[in-house]
Image 1 (cartoon, one colour):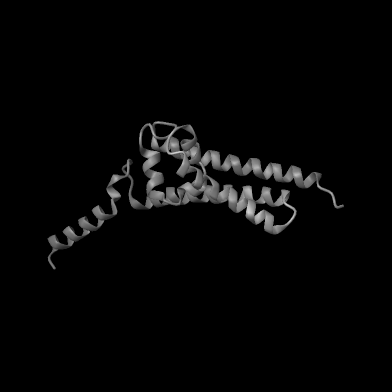
Image 2: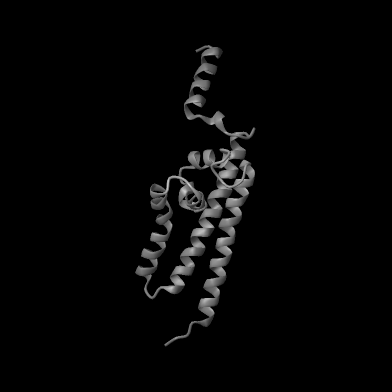
Length: 150
């Protein structure tokens, strides 16, 4: 195999993966780091909401069912609301970031999300997720502090 044939195969693989459509001039390691930070914020949000739901629930099975329902509900609502403000709000939840290519495409498109810049949209999502985590932890703490044995 010649050097030119290797370069052609390399280009064909990259074009098939559509990695050149990213809006910023970043390498793959930087994009991977951004994805990790976004996913970590989503996991922390999910843990906070699950902790709050389990503090409210009477049994572990009901806590599991409620938290799973709260986790899956935004994905189901995205199928109903295809556009508008509610669609934009649903993209703040972590289950919509499972398809990371679609999430990055929505964050980078002008007019499809709240702010005009990719980084502004990403920082907004991470801030909202971490704020949701903090609020749910605070509410869990307040509920558990007021709770008494019967």
